[in-house]
Image 1 (cartoon, chains in turn blue, cyan):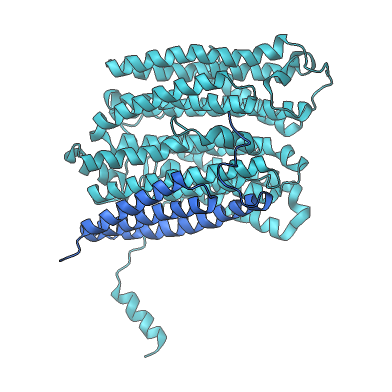
Image 2: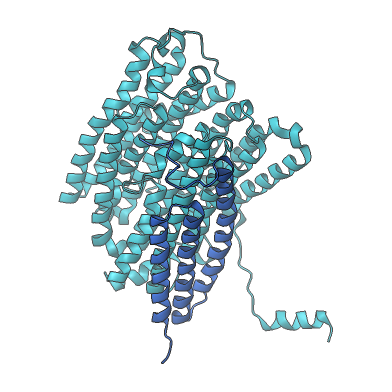
Length: 101
Length: 506
């Protein structure tokens, strides 16, 4: 059985859904952050699969940019999470509710 | 074989044409980038001694970068770089000017605020300049990858800036919420873009537009278009993707809130307008109803919640949500109005310019007033006419403008949106114009309520000592008042319609 692009696209859609649902149901900021990374990586698989199918380099180039930007986001995101955790250890997203209305 | 020989061989084997770069077209970004690096170096060399020069230095950078924008505007030619991935036309230039000047005004707003608190001034201004650099790139981007990189370049510094008061849990919360929702939005947008790339086979908008026009509507394409638009809907805080905005706005430092509410939102709109009008001309029957619903929901719900707010920053946040509804309204009829959606794009750009002036001004007054009252409650504005007549007059101008009362700028902006909606002569356009009209009346209620507090109510604790407004805030107020009045009275807004369409760089 040949593994075609469709398999990869399905995998990418599944990963994206896992990340999406994970972000909505998990309440730990770190796990929410990991779910976001999962979504970004699903996008990478999708870009590479399409690039392979279209025989076009642009999709693979896009992956480099997504990777680099995701790395920058991790740096910034983790620093914010650490700043929050320092103030309130064991915080969950539900505890962050001093701002509402 | 020596290493040099190997290198020579490799170079000869790989054909590489270095692209020709039009430095004049690229000058605003190049100057801003070089200047930001300069600010970093000055910070590293000067350390504590350099702190008080930082706002001035950054401000000069923004103004210097505006010079090539003006020369390019006078030149008037459409320049296309990197095989159409980066286009400098009047649409892009008007927006670059807007971003740079708003950046300058935000520096003016921040100067005293940052100097008063122990807030790491130098880094603040460096990140602000990087974010504005992302916006200027966004105005010219005509390629999915460029749009994505520009969006992240403007967002990532903004996440850090929102969490700037790091010892304050509210600011932490603002930053965390903004960061999670922002990355969530970019992930959804990216997924849409990858599908778009899969269908069209290229990342350049011009090629995508050609491919998609012949493709018509397919389920996958619809999904791609909607995902991409939803990504930007988060950035512009359209209902139901607006939930982060009020919390982030309240928790972030107020000058930065002004920046997020104006420049960051405008940049989201730019990407939205560019993608919709250039890449989706053939998908109008999917995109237009979606934008109709998004726009009607955004203005109605934004206004209804804004009415109940007692905190001025939250009220301005929800008013900004509602204003976003008016701004995106022309996109609900973009294919039915003249010149391939250019009249829709032009109405949006003019609205963004006027909105930036009046909203930055309103925030300037809030920042100035909070120096005395130390409060963000609307009731703390009571009796301001007696002890701060200048601020009261300025705030009245901004509030009337936000409410859309002639002859302020906001009136002209609303009028253009209405005329585009009615021009389409379709049921969709007319009904949306009706929704917008009802909302304008609703909105006047809460804007005028603040004006009423300032003019007719007594000061809450009888304290009528004067407000000391620092010179930087006076300058910011002067710029915004003049822009708001001038655009309304003379109708003077940049004309981007002299081109047939938003240039795609083909």
